[in-house]
Length: 240
Ligand code: F6R
Image (cartoon, rainbow, N blue to C red; front, side):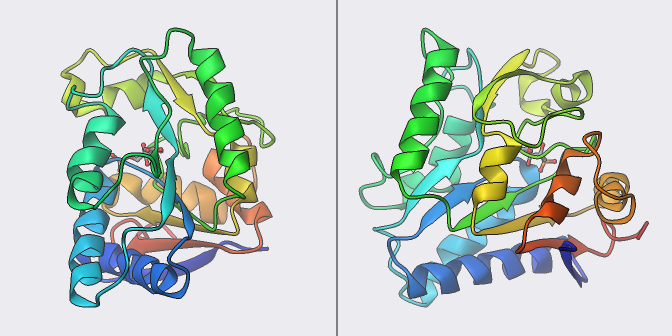
């Protein structure tokens, strides 16, 4: 299947398009299981999701979510951790968020054991209905860097130099490793939505949509999914 594509005028409109899909899905199925992404691209999505949910009386107290990834060795009170991000952008605004907003624990004594625990909890949830994804400048999804096997599962990975350099909240000292869901996990979601905005994403978006399926562009694996859509602003779509 080809990856679907929606191109809108601005980054704000792209985020709103994603938030609209999420609100409608939660309204249809309040106990939905969501796969969440972090990153700068996704911040306006959470803000719009909370706004629309409030305006439309959408029940936000019953969904379960699993974040894609977390850095190894970064405490949850560090602004660069995805735990900190998810708390400030989402869970701090939800009632009773504790046990239903899941992230890998980057501070676990044994990260490999933690990856296996996370994988088992994800499996026990019944599976992800909608997986949100950003895209890295090198085409990564989650922290599945170029070269990753498309059957990969939740595990500990080494981050690419380019990925570490783009983590501005660590001021040049980004962690070396992360726990991430694998491409195999991502492809099992019933629906995948990838959001990319800005000129910096034009090259990886073109590699994903125009250059065929390749392990060297992990996001191109979405072409193997039967319901994957890329939501793009004009800048991210400018090389298509
Ligand atoms: C984050 C994640 C990453 C980001 C990607 C883009 O949970 O899984 O794949 O989506 O690195 O990040 P931004 O949006 O900061 O460019």
